[in-house]
Length: 241
Image (tube, rainbow, N blue to C red):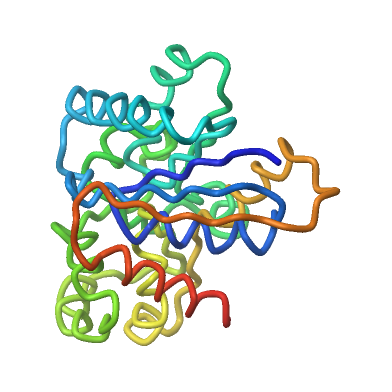
């Protein structure tokens, strides 16, 4: 059974894990939520690399991972290539904004990417497609984590932030944002939304022997709090969808 580590600063990793459990239910999963360093989106590449290497070294002592999923667009955009060089015997799977699926259906001018500032500045697809609208919302990932069990409180803030978006498609370029898709659909009812979970799960499937029909799940946080229990509650809710 492959040992699969998922890393994110918070709830985004749970969204990726939930999809992987449905599509690839034959791995030993560890979700590491780095709430000590939340949010990742406002940190420099140098800081993110240091944090990530420290986390990987700590985790490898008790969970000898075969595959690492960066369940975070920001980590993928900034440090995945360096990590592939350092850990050459490990498969790294990144999370990219679903820009290409959106562009298969819509023109660049009709697409908006919601992502962190760091992702927008570092992701290669964001750099390539200049006619897409790019928007970052300060501290949104942290606000989502803080309100896991009551995300509706974010609706007034989101209505104000998204008031000027007049596009046909919105790409959710942060894995946290999948959690607020129902709210986003209420605010932008005519928009089609694109996210990254399916792509990550398909990529994982290509590295895994699916003959086994069982899986294991562990959740770990980097800072002691009730956050782990909230993540477990959220995963349980996602399993019902």
